[in-house]
Amino acid sequence: GQSIHYEESVESTQKIAHRLAYDQAAEGTVVVAEEQVAGRGRMDRVWHSPKYTGVWMSIILRPNIPIPKAPQLTLLAAVAVVQAIEEVTTVTPQIKWPNDILINGKKVTGILTELQAEADRINSVIIGIGINVNQQMEDYPEELRTIATSLSIESGKRINRADLIRSAFNRLEHLYELYLEKGFLPIKLLWESYAISIGKMITARTLSGSIRGRALGITEDGVLKIEDTEGIVHQVYSADIEL
Ligand code: BTN
Image (cartoon, rainbow, N blue to C red; front, side):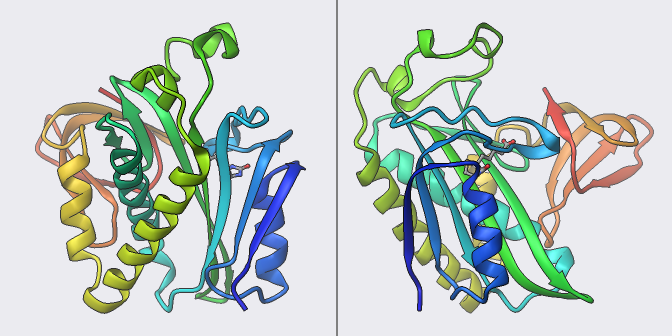
């Protein structure tokens, strides 16, 4: 059945979750680690995951949805983490599409969603969540200091990581049930209520080039819509966004 795998030190919780999912782990199985020595971010980046200071975890879901709808679950996870942060701290985070959670413009959480699929069916969705919790500014390497922050830096308090994990799981479970019952619309509305870039001029850097325009919102599938200066609406599946 569903289980929690707690580890002291791992390469990446994503890697362990992938193996568990491959071995038919039940939906709701989670992997949590105190430290990752090879944490991974989106677009092949490294995710800095020092010991005892953050929440590094991966969750296995097995929704019965077609592959193009998988981005919806990234957005769902982002809403769950924002709500958990609001519950456990006094700060109000915002979401930058698709999955960065920011406080005062600096990144406090990243989410990496990966799939295992056969033909065109999803076998499992592995949602990796990294939350910077008790790091202090001097713990960050120089190059991250202007772009990264932690809940402790922003709230001026030490945060209990177990409380945060518990809250995140509860929110995730609640939103996932809502999603299975009512579809993506209620999640989309919540997501948009926390989003910073909607309605603003942004630049989306994709692997095939940049698009500059106004972010209109997200589609039913969770894909970003951008209207460029010529009035052409683009759908962006994966990109880095600059405001
Ligand atoms: C990003 O913003 O680029 C996504 C970062 C995702 C980090 C989390 S930490 C837990 C899980 N294991 C990993 O190796 N990465 C994700």
